[in-house]
Image (cartoon, rainbow over all chains, first blue to last red; front, side, top):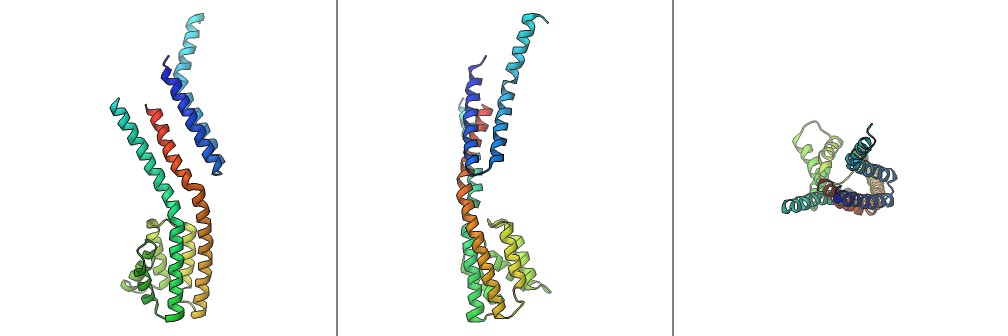
Length: 64
Length: 173
C-alpha cells in the first residue's frame, strides 16, 4: 500500500475543514455542508480501490 | 517532477485569479454606487440651478468622470441623438441594459435606475427633484448593503480561490 494515499487524504481533510470554517463564518451553512459532503465523497473515491483490494484479500483468504 | 511543480503552480495561480476577480466585483460595487449617487446629484444640480435641457446635462455628466457608470449617461445620450422616435426613458433603459455587464452593479440597482429613468421628463422641476432625491435615498441604501456584502464575501472568495486551487493540485498529483 502506498503511503502517499494517507498524506493525500490528510491534506484533503485539512483543506475541507478550513473551507468549512470559512464558509460557516460567512453564513453559508448549506454550502459548508456541501463542501463537507464533497470532501467525504472525494476521499471515498480515493480509498475505493483499497477497499476492493481488502475484500478480494478476504475472499481469497477464506476461499469463497 | 519539475513539470509537476510548474503545473501545480499554474493551477493554484489560475484559481487565485478567479477568486480575486470574483472578490473585486464585491469591492467595486460600493464605489460605483457612490459615483452613481454623485452623478445623479449632479443631474439634480443641473435641473435645479441651471435649468439645462437633458441632453446638455447628460453630456456634461458623462464627460465629468471616467468610470463605467458614466457610460449610462453617454450611451443614453447617444441613443437620444441617433435614433428617432425614442424617448428619454427608453434610451436610459437601453443604456442601462447594455452597460450593466461593464459595471459591478446588480439587478436591484438596475431596477432602481430604470424606475428613475421612467420618471425623467415626466413632471415639473419639483417633481424631478423629488424623484432624484428618492433615487438617491434608495441608492444610498443599496450602497450600505453593498458595503456589508463586501465585508462578508471579499475575503471569502479570495480564500476560496486559493484553497480550491490547493485542493485541485492535491487531487491531481
